Length: 277
Length: 160
Image (cartoon, rainbow over the protein chains, first blue to last red):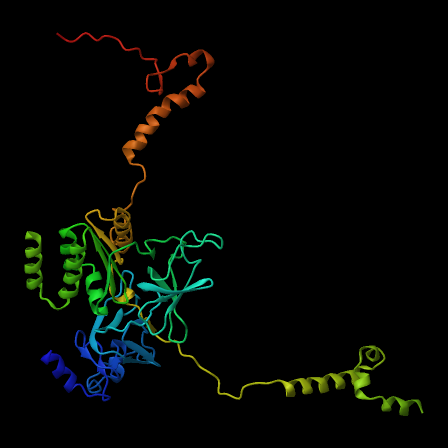
């Protein structure tokens, strides 16, 4: 962390913009401006002297760049809005295209609804044809009773106040009330809807959720070997776990909570101890 | 006297539909021009410089889903909830599907089963096209499958 602090200190706040390529995986601060690779040669720092002559300097190839969470577009500039490490993903596969995706890997607990996110919500009220669902955001989300698989005007889903809902945001922006659904675009539930009885719901940081849901996460692979269990991860920092006994459920919750700040070796130790018992 | 009276007709009166027939072309044009002027004067517009929206090459996207290839959020292990386990495979396979598309072509009916099915059909369809006289040749065996019994089984003498 000392290294991160040093980087932060030497970066001139509000001064010259840094090139995004140069600060990859380094700490960036809110308010900083980043330069994309395409902009570097035009107005990058210190490049004026030996800039290679370009035929198409006027009409540079405009490559599309996706700026993810923590970054904001302001005209042609790219500004940082969150504190964290700058990440980058090369184009290809399902990602944006063009010059790839940049985002800030930040640590936070407050959830801000984002369209398309799968979250765990708690039904807090039933009013007419919508449910109010608490998702941990600034405002409860609304969930129509028709947004369940197989629901019709006559056939209402059996949802009570206090139920846990696993759903997806269809409307989420800063000006409007977020709206959830429990079906996909084809009208199928795909695992969304009311989460079963019992189990334990607890909250973790948003960063941990992403860490656990990463495709190469060894924590989950290890956890899955322990005993039969079920987990639901909400992007809003909520985790619901259930195992055969209450004790197993509690152990599971404790592991998941604790593994955020453990090294790989420590994790190995814990899992080997658990496997023995 | 008549000319004087004509000039006295007001513009509003001349603009009326039934008065148009008797008007000559010049006064018609004049009236139209005046009408246009009134319309354009009453037409509202915003006194703003023309907006030029440049095509931006930065796209904003606030979801982590696009950035990190996150797994599907529901999981079940060691058979706790078979339904979810099936779903998990299906949802997480979507991400990998693009890479190994050919391998993940899941068949509802395996090739062998398909062959077995059609094997029994050979007789059924064969019977349909057979003549009445030959139909006796098709007999149902104990499984209910219809098979041609043209080649009668005979005892084959073992070679020593």
